[in-house]
Length: 266
Image (cartoon, rainbow, N blue to C red):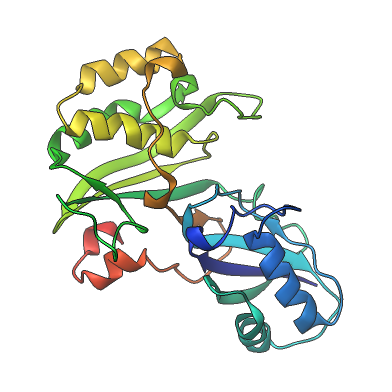
């Protein structure tokens, strides 16, 4: 039997998703909890890795087990045993052909900036503090990324993907209160790709570039021209799409949920 789980976690509580020997990871914490519920070892597969400090509300993982538990007992048991900062939102049984990474056709991320002159103990770990941003200019420039491109200019130095080509299906930049939100969906992402895009759009929002300069950067295929990678705490993995699998809709990042009327981001 194979089970799929929708999980959310606080990036600051872990050194990324992937299992490590020297630091706490989401995979280690969840595998330990599920192994106790199953009373047998559990090995997780995931939709993708997230870096240290990156949050998730829509990460999807799966595992095979011979243990017989109700779906609700899997969820309740895992949550009772999970480390702080990690929660299982839902559990569903899936067929053996399902794979959280290879069955996915798209991923969706959000990147959050909050405009503030002073440090915020409540927000600085969940969004990146910034001076006033021109979200309209950011949105206009971001549209140049739509479609299939070589995204080498936005690729992390340690990326191991065979191809730099990705298909950008949607990218918007909008505002709610003092938050500026980049909402991006693609078939897949290169290492640090969203954070590098966020860094470039951040500069554009401060008047350091425009849509034409972003197009030139994309064409250049040169990461050294793209500037700094945006910090990890502003990034959220919010959804992974699987045709034919009607999984529950994942929650939005807590900051957005707390601010109320955000239908345009749902």
